[in-house]
Image 1: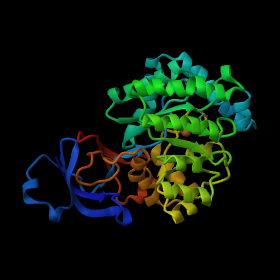
Image 2: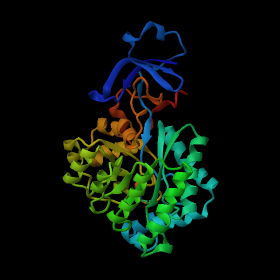
Image 3: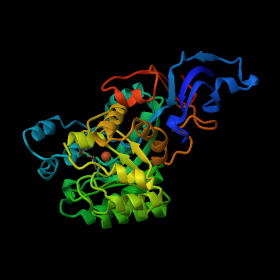
Image 4: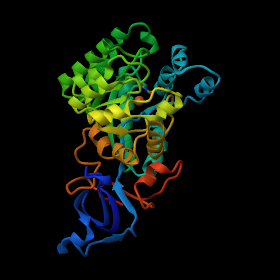
Amino acid sequence: MLLLNATMATMDGSPAYGLVEQGAIVVHGDRIVWAGAFGDLPAEMKGQETIDLGGRLVTPALIDCHTHVVHGGNRAREFEMRLEGATYEEVARAGGGIVSTVAATRAATQDELVAGALIRVDAMIAEGVSTIEIKSGYGLDIENELKMLRAAKVVAERRPVRVRTSYLGAHAVPPEYKGRADAYIDEVCIPGLEAAHAEGLVDAVDGFCEGIAFSPDQIARVFDKAKALGIPVKLHAEQLSNLGGARLAAGYGALSADHLEYANAADAQAMAKAGTVAVILPGAFYTLRETAAPPIGAFREHGVPMAVATDCNPGSSPMSSLLLSMNMACTLFRMTPEEALAGVTSNAARALGLADAGQIRPGLRADLAIWDVEHPAELAYRIGFNPLWKRIHGGVL
Ligand code: DI6
Ligand code: FE
């Protein structure tokens, strides 16, 4: 397949989006085999199935590197409570919050979880998303954590989308372990990780390091097990307070540390040194009406790669639009539209440990999004508008 007359934002690390005007891309099987200016296209590449893009913008297909799309129920009632004045922490301590989604997730069958997730996944695909990270973390017992991860795998069988799974057993302390977080880690979280890994269900191990969840010491025990099993780690860190989660994650060479509203320059430095990606989640910041913004300036200064994701979950970020996340990252955090686009392409791939996606470059997967826009800044600029024209996933239009 030969794509002609493309304006390409290659996101290959060269300046200004790696923009190429009058570009061409040659796709063979599921790979990009050539990409560049049409004038440089080798003669033997011509004369195949050709699609004229009419000057439209082509970017790497988008990657949502932090989601909880598999979950039971919803928390619209809690949304109402917060509007009546309750804080997120008050709701959580009153038995609402994550724990109420745990009850709904446990009550759901695997098929019900898949069906619920597909509604949100379809919205993501419609915006040019090709790869989605999906976490467990609402089962909080071994069988239900496995059920969530199996449901995540089924999503990739039902739809043309790539799924990367993260085991988030250390998301919250379930009611039956109230006040016994250490016992939960030893008796459920770690054995659950072993079981999920044995079934091939774990691409990465995640945790929630926070006063309402788990301490750095408890997270470290989970990470030690991940390390022993050879699984990369990532962490929800510094979302509501600074407990040193980002530095802990960096110490384990984590793929990413996520949220980071309360992170500081020292955290940024540690992350830069470890190559840990900062995953910025403006949907949660917005929903919780948080006022502390992640230290974008420090990440920039220290060269920490920044990704942007939806955090799509029923509580703190009931958002499935990655385009809206980009807009929010710019307007709320003053990221540039180019940083926002790198955040959902090249840096999102890096946050998932994927070397074969997120850029337009020969050898990478032919996961492409074609947009009815003239300039890539338009993707972050409009609000609640989806200019996707077509999506190519693994070489298939
Ligand atoms: N931080 C979050 O924002 C989500 N999980 C987490 O650790 C919230 C999940 C929820 O409220 O259901
Ligand atoms: Fe999250």
